[in-house]
Image 1 (cartoon, rainbow, N blue to C red):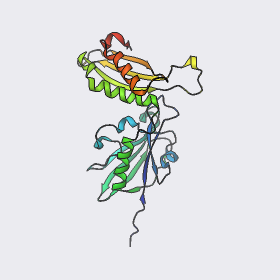
Image 2 (cartoon, one colour; image 1 turned 90 degrees about the vertical axis):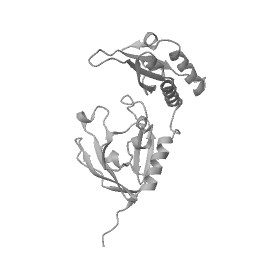
Image 3 (cartoon, one colour; image 1 turned 45 degrees about the horizontal axis):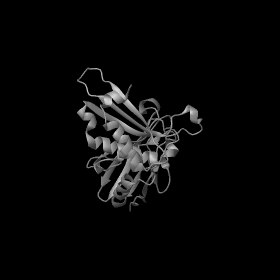
Image 4 (cartoon, rainbow, N blue to C red; image 1 turned 135 degrees about the horizontal axis):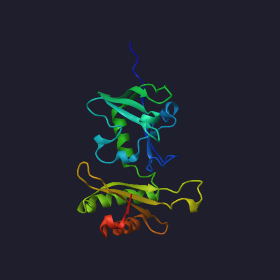
Length: 237
């Protein structure tokens, strides 16, 4: 009689990387049975950023779809083509979600074992993690809400521009205050052009404070951006 595979428990944990310059948002790190098994085989890798966990459930990085999916589950701070990444194939068989067919393209060839999850527990954990805001610092909350405000406004489209990103800017640990930018939010956008035309890129370097609520700061920053033609008030890059 064939032994039934062990059913593992998936937990997704938000973590702000030590080297957050590569992506200032928190990574969503998978723990399996409480163990960070990915760190053992790809120690330099970052799990995919929480910014990929927004929107519809079928777009989440670890979503299970009808067909098996090959997913990059950790990536280096440079690029996968430079230093390699860790990939897994995710598929569903009846009431199980299976991770298998691992591939490690870094210098370390080891890969984790195959894992089987209860589909109900797995999908509930994905939904919980996508909705989790408990990890956020005020600068993260301001960036997230400001991005939503700017997106909903349609302001950049009115000026023929495309909002590229809104991200938190953290104080760098161990760096003297006079040598680093204060904590804040960076807004990037570009002017829409036709194929082959030069595209101008713009940015706002905004600052957050400790003496205002998150909601007040979002209103203040949004008002500053929405008051004028953004191509004239932002810095061109």
